[in-house]
Image (cartoon, rainbow, N blue to C red):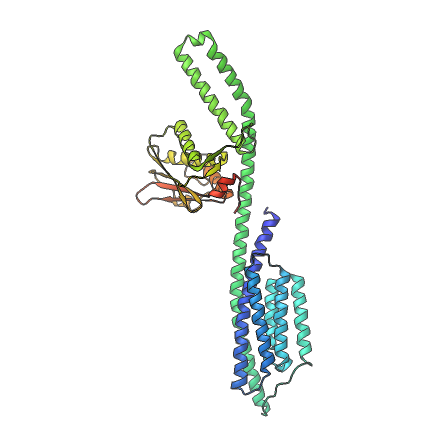
Length: 433
């Protein structure tokens, strides 16, 4: 389930987009009113009270400028703000209609445009409130208005003039509704896509938590038998009958080394899950961290050939993160499995980011894997649990605010590029995007 604050954040972003949409529509409405006023004044020869009507247009322009400033402030936009913006638009339309014939003005149907906008953008109670306000304004205009001084003409000419005004109103309202509907549908699609992505992320994080608990529990359970094996092997190492057998003693030493390695792996799992066994925070540098990491991986995996190039400069101090270390080990292991004879590792700095690229000369990634990169259980390896390694890589890197990119090379082989903000490594903490 998505956390409540995350869902609220998505809705706030959608409201900001809707505020920007209202701003754009208001600019169009201002331009339409200017054209209509000029057309009626000079084409039909109907004198209009230009000073107060221009004053209303100026107020709408000022309202739009204020709304733009409000939009650029990185603050939340509530339904109430959108409601007030629409109420001000209704008020401006009412004043313009009051100055130009009241309810007899063919443009009175533009109230329906405001109500339609509210029905899509606002919650139910605010929509009904906007409907009540617009209806009250319409009713008031049936008796309170400034009559237009229409030149003397017969009824047929007046009816024809009214029909022409209705046609212009229809064209204006239809264009604004089409534009609005297309934009709002795009906003809603974007919102639904973000919510779907967050649901997916939430499900993946829940899976990671379960896997982490499983790994931590297994590490606790393995600690005791490993300690027992270590004690028994130490006793064997000191026993005269074993010490007399050189080959057997060498095998005991190798067994001790492997047990110690298992204990280190267990300690690393507990450290990554926040249960370090008394180890203090390790402060190092980027180059020192990667040099030690490559050296440790080379010693434990014994690759045929690895080309390691570190071009990270200037060096910066960071906090060694066991989880990040395990992530990079996982990338190395995958590349080594695909290309046992050669592995390329390049470290560089790009502005404020740490960039690690691991290349191989293997068969490359399937198109299906590249399309679903980082999804659990998506792997070309036909074995249980395949694909979980890269899935964990993607999620740990995402928590640190970074990205993972995989691509195939035209001449064969593939590469995985890990990009992390240096600030996330320096703070030693996880950062969500």
